[in-house]
Image 1 (cartoon, rainbow, N blue to C red):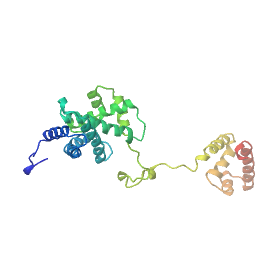
Image 2 (image 1 turned 90 degrees about the horizontal axis):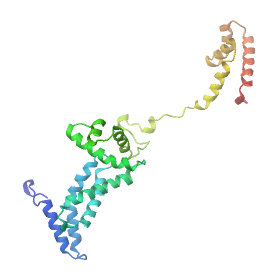
Image 3 (image 1 turned 45 degrees about the horizontal axis):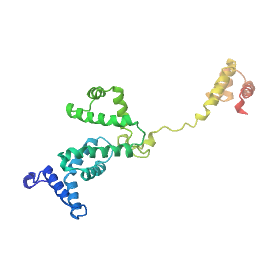
Image 4 (image 1 turned 60 degrees about the vertical axis):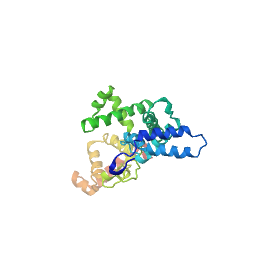
Length: 260
């Protein structure tokens, strides 16, 4: 809350304390309680936004995170006891953060992540933010591991777990891929895949043929030469080539049970 010239008009902590004092004076059924409670929420929304910035690396919209954090703020207001001598922000911040973390843990991940990694990810993400500010760049895995005194393998596992929040649509266009959808860049089923077993069987039979007969098959079915061209290539009559091809194919079919 600011006055003219941008100077603070009322200190937020002071205003919060006054509002809680007023709230404690009102009976449970007093209509004014809701107005005081709403004022407490409005005054302390910046605390929620501050907590939400810790999760800015996530893919969730920031306003959604703020809404979830506001639920934590409301719970903190309803449970806060001013007589204990604790400042409200000190009491409320863990409640707000807990509500946001619970939201990410229970509602956002599209893949199951072990609870240990979920809890460790909170530490890793916090260390990443601190190291980014300290070094002015994204920290490396060894730096994060050294900061938290945990194995690098655990850091890598947490980074992988941190990517398990949202599933990308196969039909969504990817800006860095020239507008192509992920589906357009995936491999397709090779129509010749079903013939792999057959080709392997033919290859096995071909190696058993004599050199001349194997060459005739290769020229006819792999080089796509006509019988006339084969006869010229091998120096024999076309009729002889035709008889040899017939005999070869009969032999291949006899040894190839799937042809039946």
